[in-house]
Image 1 (spheres, rainbow, N blue to C red):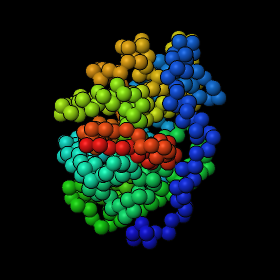
Image 2 (image 1 turned 180 degrees about the vertical axis):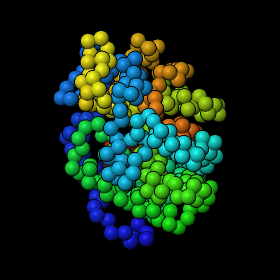
Image 3 (image 1 turned 135 degrees about the vertical axis):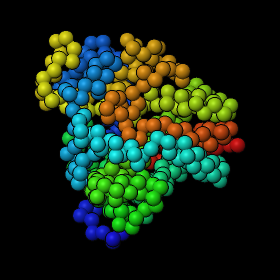
Image 4 (image 1 turned 45 degrees about the vertical axis):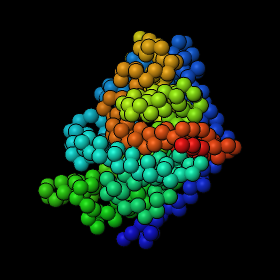
Amino acid sequence: MTPAATQFQTTFDPDRLRRQNVTARLLRYLFENFRPAAKLLRGLCPILRFRGYALVTRYDDVREVLTNDAVFGVPYRPKIEELTGANFMLGMDDGPDYEANAKLAMQAYKLSDIPAQANAAAQEAGAIVGAAQRELDAMGGLVTPLLVGICERYYGVPVSDPSMFPLWAMAVSNYLFDAFPAAADAHAQARAGAERLCAAVDEAIAGGPAADTVLGRLLAAQAQANGVPDNQTIRTIIVSLVTAIVPTGTLAAGNMLEMLLRRGDMMTAAREATGTGDDELLSRCLFEALRFMPISPFWRRDAKRDFFLAPGKRLPEGTHVLASTYSAMFDARQVRQPNRFDPTRPASDYMLFGHGLHYCLGGAFASAVIPAILKPLLLCRIVARAPGPRGQRAFFAIFPERLFVTLQR
């Protein structure tokens, strides 16, 4: 049964997540201007408790929360199981189940695949930029379609509707990683998006994808092990990978580009690296720019028992802990000259894709693919915002859906 023929229980209405209400605008403004408040909190109240939550802002404390899995557990299991029918490593604490799930995922989703996928994305990006005239939608016309293409070509998921597929994934991600109780619209749209992603994966499982895809490898492993993992587990892994690369990659690339357009020093450094063919330096420039506008201000963990995170700072069992990696990356106690744009920073200064056991599964993939996609854009002699509203980001939930730039070769 194809997704088009499936009788979905929930209507997918993308406009519900496009509407820019006052609360959404306020939260985005607070996030983008969080650094001054974070600096104040690090000095005066590094662990801010409120209504069952605790916002943790200092580098050492953030690392402790994200690495101490015995005390601070991930909260994602109920949502993952609700949306896909099974759990995934993202929703598992450390232990045999996590290890088995991670091993299975990494056997199919191989680090050795990354260079070929990055090269393919670079070629496609070059063709898109080369065919553009004076203006290009860097998000809806470049970044997001190429990430969706990876899902079809590499993951093995059929994409029947390329315009809606990324929105389904973004709706799922928007709900899954929300640290606070989700609004009814966000919940409903996540369920609707998940239904459609699951239907697409189920169709691929039934049809037998190409062997040299992530899905094909999982099905081969299933055949060799007498039905283990089952189809539901495979579906959950693939849907999780889709939501790891499309929404996160779109958000990361959009924030990188936004920072380059805002700050001439960042744009100049990135374009100089591109012009000299120094791909490593280009990647460093882009991810250093992302440090100033990361994909999330914090990652949530839940305290499994009472714990003193710092002297006199007891977190009761059940506390929802918001570990602010954004704040940590600007903590002068551990990060040298944190407010300076410095592409030569050590890896220890970064927590862009989380930290510890639940570091983003797609982090390594995104680190190679995103610079490959943006490089052809930066090779243009002029890259600037398009005039008027077209040159400002338009959002689908928290994800940049459109951002037009002007090009000159």
